[in-house]
Length: 100
Image (cartoon, rainbow, N blue to C red):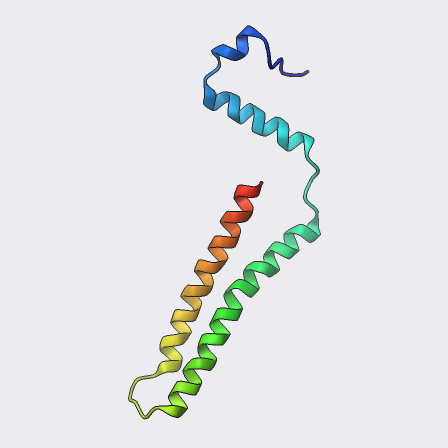
């Protein structure tokens, strides 16, 4: 059963319902995502969090060895790195969601 795109009933449908039907039909026409795509996205999110965290910890260790402070740069920059990594992962996941 197909949807008639030029019929008079199509003009009476609200735009929101028509968009949902079009999106569903497009999803049926496109190929399914493979397991490798999902694993690749999972790896991308992992690296998006891990790299900024490790880089900030390395910077924090270097600052702790260089400066004579009572302040722990390693701990502070660890938290900053995790925050930046989570924001980075959120960006990539939202970008991938919009692509679908």
